[in-house]
Amino acid sequence: MKAQRSHPDELIVGLVSISDRASRGTYEDQGLPGLRDWLTRALASPWQPHGRLVPDERAVIETTLVELVDVVGCDLVLTSGGTGPARRDVTPEATLAVATREMPGFGEQMRRISLAFVPTAILSRQVAVLRETADHAALIINLPGQPKAIAETLEGLKDADGKTIEAGVFAAVPYCIDLIGGPYVETHEAVVKSFRPKSALRSR
Image 1 (cartoon, rainbow, N blue to C red):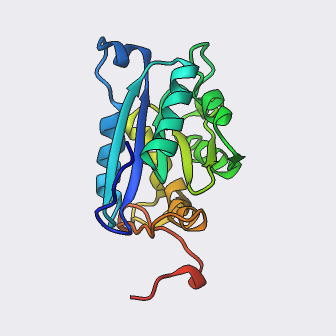
Image 2: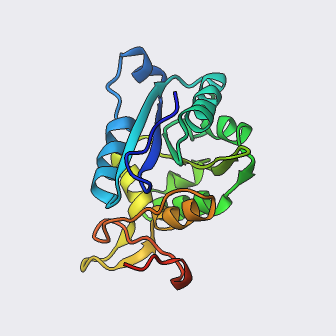
């Protein structure tokens, strides 16, 4: 069912937590709460979430991503989990399978940020893509499974005074959504400062 915006600039966000154990109920899901909590802190614009908890099954993940973009009409879809080298980690493959174009800079920057914390960040296979139909487009980004790592990759690295020393990937998300025809998204700068060229800034 297609989501209805309550405001022209309301961001429709798909949140997908991917975990065999959590989807079976044997493990408490951390992905969806982590994503919701961070977006609540970061977004200054209105937004509505559409959450899904699914197992590490490629076909199920693909179907879920297609539904959120093509049926619900999400502008942004954030996935959590399933991006490592384990045999059941198939989130990147499912994401690429439903993509029309890849956005490799997101994955590169997420790994750069994570490497400041753990050397095993090089094992991450996170990707970001666009899925485009005749009248709609969405940005899909793979994120880690743990809330702390989700926040780190989205916000970036800051020094003791709060100055950004490595930009988080969400800084580029609002302008990307502008470029693909989505709503004008604004963030709370204390969490993450979004970047737009001067020509793309909306006059107040």
